[in-house]
Amino acid sequence: MKKLFLNLLLVVIVFSTQSALGWNSTGHILVARIAWDNMSPAARKNAVNLLMQAPADACLRDLFPNDARPLDVRAREFFMRAATWPDIIRPHDADDHRPCTKYHNRDWHFVDHFWRGVSDDPNALPQDVPFPLASVNAVERLRVFRSLAVSNNPAPERAMELAWILHLVGDIHQPLHTSGRVTELPSEKHGDGGGNGFSLGEITLHSYWDGIVDRADPKKQNENFATYVERVANEFEQAAPQSTFTLFLPDKFDRWADESLMRAKTQAYPRALKRNQMPGATYRLSVFGVARQAVAEGGYRLAALMNLMYGT
Image (spheres, helix red, strand yellow):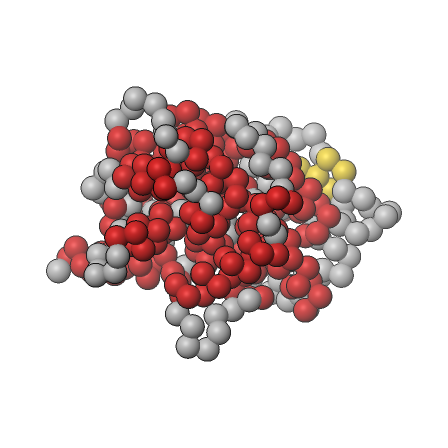
């Protein structure tokens, strides 16, 4: 009974949490679903087999669906859920004593490059600020895990490293995960934390970008989540086909982050965006257009990386 409760709790977390650490669960699941669509059968099988060797206390294996659907359908869903695992293990509060929270690492989710300016103001064009990058960051972690996940290290360690890869590829394609905008505000002289310091009243700018897919393209009436993900993934792949992107493999994670940063500089902070006010339809559609490109691109790149690592 305790095991069943934990499984149900993890599924609820996966499909309802609005994470402040990356795309929300919908965004990460879409990146992983697009990746799965473009992975070889061998890469799919090898990745799932490795993920299932995670430590028993990591909460990762518990994400595998235990029902009567075909095994390949459940394996795909498990792969998509695994992409949300680094957010699942984030402690909810001081009373969260789940064993898997010990695997949480806040500073692995982003790589803040610093800049100042306004996205569309010719009198205040974005300019880089020469603050150093954090020594531990999402790009640095991807490089490390890319090597370790195919090493001879114990399988439980490699399983968690793979889950981090699935997540971090999505994270660095969320533009505000590469951005630390500097302003004259005392709290933003060393960056705004990827928009976490920019309040829109109800939520932060960071949270707005995290949840833009649900906000701009929500589930239809009577549409379950699995059908929703399939529909939106197909829409994204059709609107942004793989042929329109450069994959930059192997190991060009810094190029991915540079492109994402450029999206933040040119799209995230227009003159019309006001603090303590929710943006209107024009901004919502603009952000959704950026997200559609970024999620699709992240999915294609993740697929190429999985095929490279596990395709044989």
